[in-house]
Image 1 (spheres, one colour):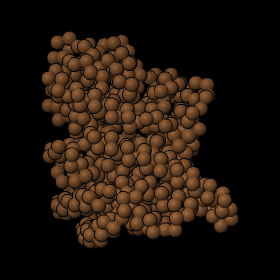
Image 2 (cartoon, one colour):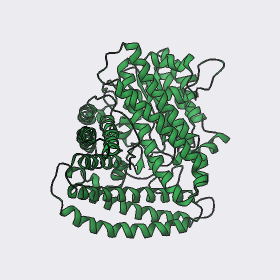
Image 3 (cartoon, helix red, strand yellow):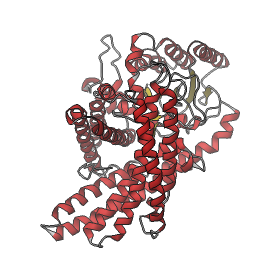
Image 4 (cartoon, one colour):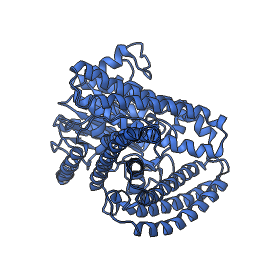
Length: 584
């Protein structure tokens, strides 16, 4: 649930949903061509039929053969599947956006590494799941900076691919793997090329300076070279990614509060509050840019400030990830946890039946579309939780040292039941809203809550515009409530504005979800992997047809194979796929 005290003013109001529809339409139209030939000159995200796709036409037959041999060698030695795609440009998208969309369409899993290069754009992205032998972000950066980018700058296209493949083959060895196991539990997609500059890039010099903090002498200069439209897109992405990380961390902290005392969770609460503040400031900066007439250099500076502020928010959360997972060790008393979850499943199942009667009695008011499929989604999440508990019991019965998947199963079930409860709560809120006295303050409160519930339970699909409008609604609604006893006229004015912003937030969010559904199966509501991705229960963009039985995590890990896992406390930089990218 979103707190009314969280103030995140509106960001840029670009028509994200329209662009997404266009991208999906073009991508789907090209599937047949791409399946028949790896040389189609397609710029839109694609479903890769071959492991080497040269849509840019830069590889000779000998190059293609050498790259394929390197890919085969990598698979033989590490069981990692490498995918290489070269195109002319990224179709106006950032490298991270384009690569994420291609990974989604291609249904890549937790053993798939992707190298995407736009030869005319001069941009690239190397993306890998954290599950691949605990391959670290530092190793990805080193490959990108030492081998990939220098070769691309010299237009040595095939050498760039081959050296990258060999770099992946040689990476992930030694003690560094162990240090990143816990990070794989926190899976929020880092789909923001700009954040990669700030969080993980290293100076290409003999000093190899660590840039996990903002280094104005390099990082800001690099960002300042980017076009305004690219920076604006990155800013939107990082706002959504950070907002999702904060929401998921809030959910996890709420669960921890039920088990631990306040002193035990104090460091995590402090990190979360700081991250929320950084996010608030970022939304405020974004809101100030709507319709502005600032000179380009000032506009660019504010966009960079948004990216770096959100990087700080991520970093603050990430400093507490290991401690949080250690403190809330889900493998301790796993059997008791699973028993408690089974009881919750029975309770929520019974609640669904009662809420069905409530929903049937509601008229199709303006906000009814916001809850139309809540019952079906809640039912899918309860079933998902039940399946996860079953998988958790199987994993908990394994010998010591092999029970790790039980933790993912427990976390999956917890998150699914929380989502189901929120979906059912939203129906009750609409019912109560219709029964209230129709004054401005009550109306605003009801509309704002309905929009907030919808966005929170569809955060896997909702974009910047809806979240920004909701932020304005929350701010004004809180103001109206505070003034209701002292200044009724001002309270009424604020409430009317809040209601308008809430309506706009809901309309934008409904449109985002509708667009998102166009890329999903027809039975998306009843498909656990799709439905739980929509609500944010499972986080990542990869929708596997089946789990990998021989992957790094093994069998039965609570729907946490295939590049998708339950969310946990932490920032987006600890998420399921890591990568490096930008311009060359």
